[in-house]
Amino acid sequence: MDAKKNRIVKSDLIVTRAHLLWSLRTFFHQAGFLEIEVPTIVTSPGLEPQLDAFEVSAKYSGPINIARRWLHTSPEYALKRYLGGLGAEITRAYTIGPCFRDELPSSSHSPEFTMLEWYARDLSLEGLMTQCESLVRALAKTAQSYGYSSTHWLNDTPFERLSVRTAFLRYANIDLTLNLDVDTLRLAAEKAGIRADGLHGDWDDLYFQIFMDLIEPHLGVQKPTFLYDFPASQAALAKLDPQQPQWARRFELFAGGMELANAFDELNDPQEQRLRFTADLQVRQARGAQQPPIDEVLLRHLSNLGDCVGIALGFDRLVMLLCGVDEIDKVRLQSWEES
View 1: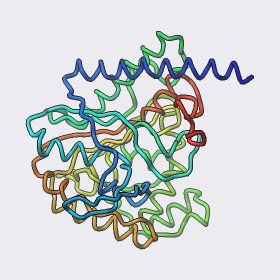
View 2 (view 1 turned 90 degrees about the horizontal axis):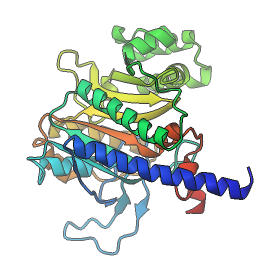
View 3 (view 1 turned 30 degrees about the horizontal axis):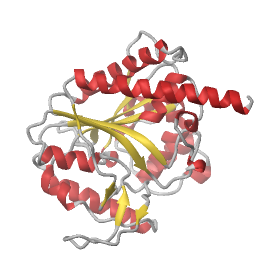
């Protein structure tokens, strides 16, 4: 494609992206959500062991004497602070804006990307799946109205809902309900065909290797798939199932071969969350990763969060799928290399 034609195509995509953003805001307005603008420079950017944040130079430390600042990896902490504090009476809230993760760019990831995140106190996790599906379908109609019909992955049948247990049985013949210890899981992974160099590490390392090699390639290919009920060690900021505490109340959405969204039945126990944050920091330290502080304000407000579900969705990736393009840079105004 010549440079001029490429510019025209990208211009069309950026215009369509703007219309999709308008449709998104219309969807949430009609569903009774309040849009909240969150800060992007924060004292704690997110502590997940697999994420690295961009550090920001700050000359003024402020009254709490924390000189280090970070570009946030997600708006999650800020929104939960709000809903557990100033927004205690708000039932539904969302935000959309830039997030930053210090990772290598790829066809589906930019170190600066756009995240949509929303929370509801009046929905179950299953109800959140239904609402997420409704949003995707609403934006697909907008894309189609602007001439984009690359939605072969989206048909009239409901999105698939698949438990992690069922996925491991179906695609790896591994039964996670047996509460396999690390050695037994290693043997099961070897039998399932995981290469030898992927059989090292602890239980979670093995789980991720099996998931990436044998499970994820099948998800969201024929139609979008909600993958739910993760092992308790993968709970992150989600509650454990009170009836079956070996499973965490969370789901991810996969479509068109990509992960689109990640959702939690939100943990509202500050003591348990502190234990998880501390464990995450220990993993980060063992790996020689950054050591941001725990967000103490978040923990102070967490018990006021109440029963709440929340979800984060990669807006750039959704635009890619709806417009039928295979490079994230095509749906962003500037590529990471041009920034």
